[in-house]
Length: 376
Ligand SMILES: Cc1ncc(COP(=O)(O)O)c(C=O)c1O
Image 1: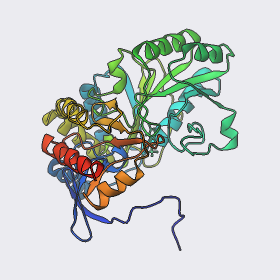
Image 2: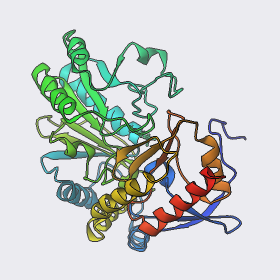
Image 3: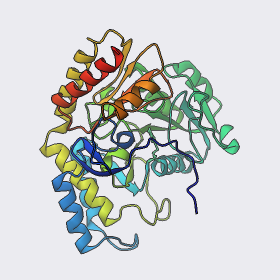
């Protein structure tokens, strides 16, 4: 059997990874400033994380969702404590797409409506209910979904009001900071107005923190830069530092009922152990503080490079924009300088999503490599 060929692949085969480094089959060491699409939050193979997973595996690897798993409660308590979101309940699932799918399902149950408002250049996963499909992203939404989702420009509250006035919308979904689409974000005024008009119209306000959450923006959640409290928050990626896990944080005003949501694998023991370990490490190593320090350093240093037109994003969810496409630079960074970076729908944007434990020296290595490529 062959693999269904949907991913263009770089010719690199990693076999080992430690901290911010990945090693390939030829023992070439790569500086990982992308962390598999922003998944590596506390660093590859962190010893505490690995130990916790090993311990868990020697006890119980899997479970059934009809018997108790105390790790789920432990995880919910720890997440409430570290994120400051104690007034939410947690539903556990396995991925970002699944978290958004469940969030939208809840919104339709809650409102009895089905249309969704999302924003241009947003990305909410390959779900049947909400994929942001823009020409730019080259992601095709299934036909049944295209009528169901309105894609509005960011930061135009009047257009959102107009859609809500049709009285058929169950949810507004927005990323804390747009990831794949290219690091645009709502203004504080926009986020606050969205929350207000959603409340007024009894529409569920969902913030997708799958990429921007878990400290990446310099606060635990990116929406916390805007002093709001969404009805639902979705998480995944950095939550498990590479172990598949996702979650839906649901404000207490939405009532749970037996059978409302469900999953076979969600909240299994191994996933919970991974996610608890991530939160413990974020706290113990003050990784959000590190994120802010390294972010300021990165921005300061990158601005010294004359070819850079713009720096976008927050924390360690950053992008540098050129006035030319960056595909060649990314290739040179991988194959000549051995550094992983990311691209975006905006082909002139080079993205970095490193582990939150990245150091100034590692940023210096990147700056030197980038300068040498640009100057040659
Ligand atoms: C903001 C956002 N939401 C949802 C997803 C989908 O997550 P997953 O690939 O785990 O389904 C992604 C993945 O890139 C994302 O960036």
